[in-house]
Image (cartoon, rainbow, N blue to C red; front, top):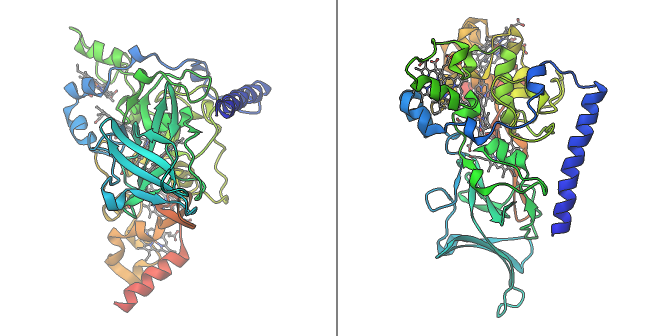
Length: 411
Ligand code: HEC
Ligand code: HEC
Ligand code: HEC
Ligand code: HEC
Ligand code: HEC
Ligand code: HEC
Ligand code: HEC
């Protein structure tokens, strides 16, 4: 196993090396010299932690704590693991009739065991403990375990749509693998902080890991801000001396950069993780290609690419914050339609003549329809289950609106 791991570590390093070569050759345009020079991640001492922010920003902190971002990763305990350990519900059968995976509660934690039952008297297999939960559980959860200071993924995830355990995304349906290393990019999108001890690529300083997505992922390291605000002569409001990033005062491109760190889909990282700081140009850290107007964009995790394909984006004013206040639990699709009306009049929609005021709260239903994900899938035996996600390409989907119109006429 360590052989495959070492190989992976090297592959990751080679990717970095080849990317550096591309940069040197000048085929990737650099637009911000300052951030391109951030060769090291900010040290732990640059961060203050959410508890500090909450002392002075009680309003944001009180509503933020229950959002999926804040709850996105956690220590694996009975409060955070959504799957059931009770007798009838704690076994996942694989496509191999002799192979099952059992989820059990032991005195020293919760475990997943891959069990070969071909000889029921002497079942064999590997067992590993749930150490970390990834996912607040809107769609599902995946679990990780430590082997020393190396982090691995567990083979069984939880599917919220089915209310059941399910094979982890991308795992073969008839085998039990405990050997999938967790790469730093996974934690970069799903936690607040960690120190990477590469090689091998899945080695981390265990104590440095801060779970949940905290304030400073979007506001930059805040220790200096806290120190200055607590001082006898706090800096003038809105000045650079405040030493904190307010995304609202960034350009559209830099606001998109911030959300792109985690919402631009599966793109290759450039160099070591955790160097990106709010306000930086994301293209110095990730190989994000400019959106092509026709390429199909998968709805999984790439809200950025999809939104940038929309004609609305060309207005130069649209950002993720036009519709989302990330400090609060999101509004539902109907109330989110209100935000369309900051730029559009309901009457300009081609269906207004037919459907009238009915459409007022339903812009999203026709222009940002829910679609199947090609990327978020779970296998159940030989079936593939697909997540349904909201498309962020705002456009005219004739088939969708015809369906909605037909449904209305039948009523
Ligand atoms: C000792 C009190 C204090 C602490 C602790 C504190 N702040 Fe602030 N913060 C302020 C004050 C005062 C302002 C300026 C007034 C305002 O905008 O509310 C401010 C402003 C801000 C702004 C807006 C800046 C701007 O330019 O518009 C952001 C964003 C912010 N803080 C985030 C944070 C984060 C994140 C943390 C935790 C790392 C934090 N603050 C910790 C007192 C504090
Ligand atoms: C590029 C950033 C990125 C990487 C890398 C990434 N994820 Fe995610 N993940 C996301 C985002 C963003 C979402 C939310 C997607 C949505 O709702 O459209 C998500 C959703 C999830 C969910 C569902 C969460 C829920 O509450 O329903 C799970 C589970 C998950 N990811 C696990 C993982 C694991 C495990 C890894 C690494 C082995 C990983 N992800 C790698 C960004 C990422
Ligand atoms: C997922 C990203 C994200 C996270 C996490 C986040 N914020 Fe923000 N924050 C933003 C954005 C974006 C804005 C600008 C909103 C806008 O455009 O109006 C903002 C604005 C602010 C402001 C300025 C508010 C104002 O009215 O000017 C404060 C203060 C703030 N955030 C505090 C916090 C605190 C405290 C936390 C943690 C409890 C936090 N934020 C977590 C993205 C984030
Ligand atoms: C550090 C990575 C990271 C950053 C930066 C980030 N997100 Fe997320 N976001 C996630 C992950 C992971 C999830 C899935 C959370 C879950 O359900 O477990 C998510 C979920 C969401 C959701 C759906 C959950 C909800 O709140 O209803 C929205 C909306 C969202 N993000 C908007 C934004 C916006 C807007 C920004 C930029 C201001 C942003 N995010 C920045 C990682 C990130
Ligand atoms: C920040 C302003 C802004 C917001 C918010 C906005 N749009 Fe747009 N939208 C535009 C602009 C600008 C255009 C391009 C107009 C043109 O080309 O004539 C556009 C174009 C469109 C089009 C035509 C698309 C096409 O492919 O022909 C539709 C449909 C549309 N918007 C629907 C919506 C809906 C639905 C929402 C809310 C979910 C929304 N818009 C939010 C600014 C905005
Ligand atoms: C024009 C309005 C609008 C804009 C702009 C917008 N969103 Fe959304 N977003 C929505 C709507 C509507 C939903 C669906 C809410 C629901 O179904 O309850 C949604 C849902 C989401 C979800 C949850 C998706 C899922 O199905 O799990 C994520 C993640 C998200 N948005 C991220 C982003 C990010 C990142 C940006 C910027 C790139 C962004 N959004 C910009 C309207 C918008
Ligand atoms: C029942 C589905 C449906 C709903 C609900 C709906 N639309 Fe549309 N919209 C369409 C279709 C279909 C078209 C193209 C029709 C045409 O051009 O004749 C369209 C066209 C548009 C256009 C482009 C107009 C142009 O000529 O460029 C805009 C802008 C728009 N809609 C905005 C909205 C807004 C804002 C809402 C919510 C108030 C909304 N739509 C609700 C189906 C819908």
